[in-house]
Length: 401
Image 1 (cartoon, rainbow, N blue to C red):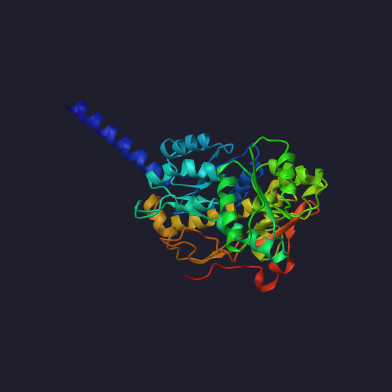
Image 2 (spheres, rainbow, N blue to C red):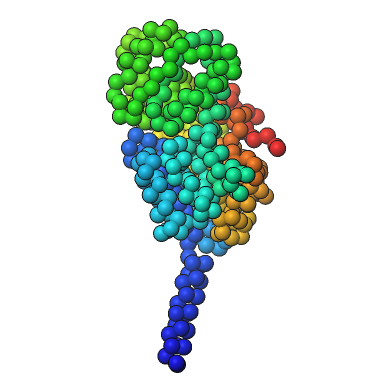
């Protein structure tokens, strides 16, 4: 009897010791994105921007008196791998929240596991409009999915408005076959229709395709006066290259992914002048942006950030998440979600300054007034209109609810 009592006491002591270690050890946050493959410039930039923010947080004492660490995983931009990683981070690594998801398809496939586990996710790059609407009440009691990137409905409206303002009347769309490409294409067609514009051609290609000449030729034969893209990866470059190959002098506009280094470098001179929405352009237009750019360049020994948008949004997502954990005074997912929906402190970010960026019914930190149009010039993205990042317009804020 005494032996059983001693064994029970030892077991209880071990459990208490494990619980104490869990409360005093590092706080684990998942970070998931494509670190290899066609979307790697986005994933690596996001990760590296997030690491800069995390280093600042830990240097200042961490969160709740504890250091914070990432549990990083490479989803390679593959839906099925993203699902496996989500389950591993939740069940094995026991992360309290996750940031990332670069690809819309991966987000839609994997984030449901976080929703079921009541663990918050901040999508800091994926832009599919449906991403933050996948688990809305009343079907779901609470929505655990947040975002710090400009969704496709915002971007589509900007592109369609630019088409109309420039006087083009016969747009053609060339989009990839991914969830991102096809959902974005639908948003873009809707935005064009709302402005009285009708596409003369809608073309599609698959990831891995290396020649888009046939799609470009059909758009040209249809009389298109502007080509609009919605795609990811190096295939974007093949689209622009095909337009030039045909000797077809037509402007190219598209979603924010036209700013990726993988597109600009593969398209070379053919990328010059393409137009796209951007939440952040690598210009030191505010003190925070200046310090962020310099810190990124120093830490990673680069001049041009491979995907400035991804890096900035990754950085900001960590500031928001750690502020919510501190405010919640807990690592419980339900409390962190509630804190994100009612952040008390203003956050000085790179993309914008965040003052109550989320509510219970609005999980989008970025509104339509924040992004600006960028264009490729000399192998890097610059403001299409320099005044957009100067003076009072340099820092654009989400309107008060």
